[in-house]
Length: 498
Image 1 (tube, rainbow, N blue to C red):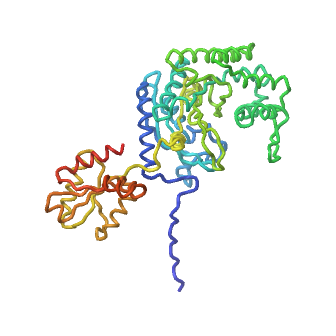
Image 2: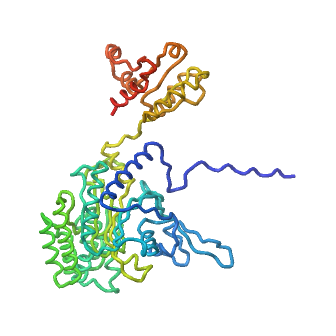
Image 3: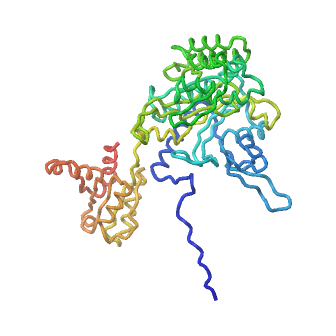
């Protein structure tokens, strides 16, 4: 009789495109979300937590395959094997489509305009790459039901405030603003409007978006016959005439020394296009509103090169870019790049209601912002662990627990060592691995005399690495204090570390 096969053990590995987050990563993200939420709340936005799962119908704009709608999203069909299969469901792709569904569903109970912010993970069933994961956090704020571009200006100001709130200094970022109506006007003037020109418009938009990387010559080539890169690969162009390409290039080069100069250049460029002139007027209004609030071109500027990829933007678009340099994997200097973006999307809710509902919003890439702060050295790779109360005598566990309770009641993060206390060295190794700032030591002699030993682990490491013998004597890393002074002495050590 054949032996039954053993069930293989599961592999202990994260699925491709996903990752685990530990300790400092989790707490730093939570701290950043709290800071951003405080700015959103200060601007009068209310929190919303929608479901992590939506019907595929609600997310339909993202789905390239209607017959099997599971590309781009993680989707499944309820009761797929039943005679009457159920709905297709999917993990949310972003936080904007759920907002459109929520507003359409509850609009009679919500104020107009409705101002909400939302934070949480989203999932995309796309090919992962370096720094590109299938699950990541977004942090959105949107105003639904306001057609005034004052709502767009407010979002831009709020975005600048959020960046500074989390630690991005003024001068290290710029919020850039454009308007899709202006771009539509440029397309109209260049003879690229109409359904039959959709393919050419797509190539033009992608070319504009590559200006920073390819420069004007590279973009000009893509507007014409095409471009061959350094590897010899050829990318087909839009096939525009020189006159058409001149119009597009004029649009990208319209940025002037001031916002007013940029607006004037754009107005001249789209003369003859009603939608283009409407977009220029909106940019002029936005700049005036921002200037009135103290948001000058050092923080927010009009920049025609901002395109934004999503097709549902219908008016102003904006992008926050970090302007400082970092080193890439090959040691080359490059700018950190975009960490947030958004714009006006007046047609998204219409999918549910049949009525146009104006909306504008922004999405902040929290993980990108955290990476930026690490790159600038403004976040530690690991956070302080708890104070560790070591165990010298198991019979006195109640007294050790009393110590840790006092520390916690004073607001100090603390724990009693709960492993095998036989080897005291292992307890200190544990504290080191926990990045603990302080260890508390008390054995029979200390208890009998009403004393406790306090070991400053961070100072001890510094002394061991740098201090001379004389400095070591002047700066002892371990002190003996009366038991009643335990909390005060630990507080003093922790305060000196901040």
